[in-house]
Length: 318
Image (cartoon, rainbow, N blue to C red; front, side, top):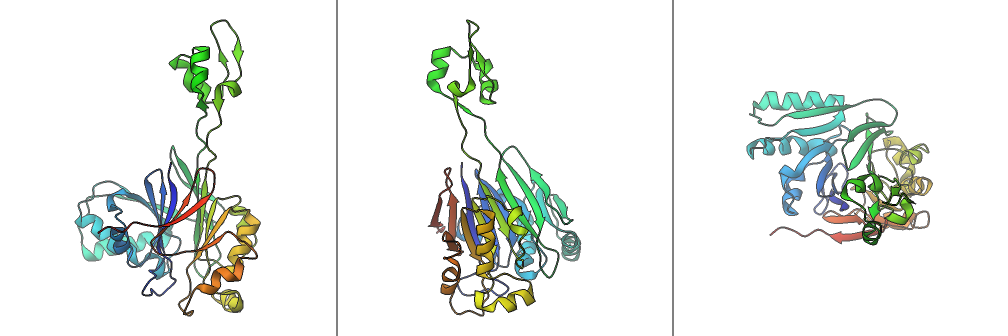
């Protein structure tokens, strides 16, 4: 089952010639979850051949323009393209007011419904769940109400060994119970332990998204043991004072959080345009957290079933 993050935008407040504002697309078993929606997101979706209609969930971390300016154009395009399926949007309460004002002002006909899920509170909260994943929101520390998101696969059923089916003549009606961990009683009344019949399912994978936030130690507990952590790194370590003043993080802060969270892999992004090059960001933290990767627009960060990370460019649509 696929589990990958596509970076659509990795800049901060101002786009550059090669970096769009923040936008990220998580692919879980070919179901797409859009996380933040910076300016230019539609261009990036088209560039990499991602059908708009496959996006049914949009998560907005906070209401600073670089994270939300692309949303209104995307919603308008949904209308123009004849979308009819429901769209779920998760974000701070004020976002709903902005959406209502947008549709009211432009008087645009919309054939699809928007289910708005208001993010509130100062503790972790389950905001979405289906048969595949759970999504929790948790508060970050920024200059405005801001949330991070934790996506976690659900544990799958155990797999029955083919040879066990033949050896013990397991009927179809008994297979679901065995997959759920129950033992099997054969025709002679013998109890066959589940461990002899099945193999464990693949380990569930997890991804956490943290942008924007200043460093605070408790954050590591909220993203404990994730396979992939995306964490903002607006500033280099030498500009830590500025990071605190603006309630952002340095690359070093991101690495400390990843290390304390026991994360497997770290991707840093949201780079300030004050720097002419991003070469120093990874160098700043590699001694603290070696498995660190720079967020690059148009790259896919794929978590394999064993937890390994594969970084590869996305194929562009011609």
